[in-house]
Amino acid sequence: MISVKSLTKKYGSYTAVDDVSFVAAPGRVTGFLGPNGAGKSTTMRMIVGLTRPTSGSARIAGSLALNLPNPGRQVGVLLDASAQHAGRTGRETLTLARQTMGLPASRVGEVLDLVGLTAAEADRRVGAYSLGMRQRLGLAVALLGEPEVLVLDEPANGLDPAGIRWMRDLLRSYADGGATVLLSSHLLHEIEIVADDLVVIGDGRIVAQGTKTELLQDAGTVVRAADCDRLADALRDAGYSVAPTAGDGLRTDGDAALVGAVALRAGVALTELRAADGAGLEEMFLELTESTQREGVPA
Figure: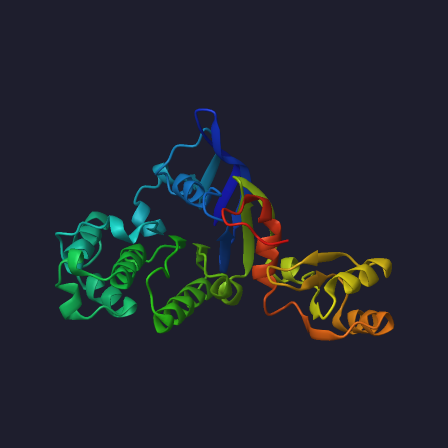
């Protein structure tokens, strides 16, 4: 389990992470989401002991990461796949890690098979790896000690669609075996598929957290119409909340049948009407972090 309590990191007058608290539970995948610069990577670095917090604490299985006797056996970390030594082969990278952890030599071959790196690829220097291969090697290092906790920052970066699906299935099965998985990714569709719980951060602060079901059950309805302004007025008059979506439609808290009835009474022709389930995470994310997005979200 990962327990984060009032975690704060300041750099001079700038506050990168501001009083962040959440729990990532065993047997579950926790999706950690936020726009660029929101504080995700800094938070994850503090969790694994690479960055010292200004205040607050982060514990893994009840201990600070710096106090773990053999960290690689208890927490697997992948924060930057490009940080691996370019002059070593993949096999050498894993061998050094397994020697540090006191693991048997056979474990190297096991994780190479697990992450899909061939013997020829394992004997190639890391500097010649593609980004996707580096991600697989980084994940192999993280999984080497069979830890009960995984902390992964953008692990699918550089993977092709088949690789992304492989990564998703691997993390899902790892959590189903009782492990804690904390996963940061910009691939919201993949997070929506694999995550059990969600933590959303914006401008260094938590803006939403809970189970995926809890956070998305209020996703409501997405609707588009020939006259969206007229439809928005009719929905507000009927007592429903209305917000623009990332596209040219509307999102409302009424269910699809009721929204259709309002449109019919108002004489507005609809071009799209659906429950927001399929795109709920993306729309929720954009709405919650709109004020902290680097790229403007059209209103």
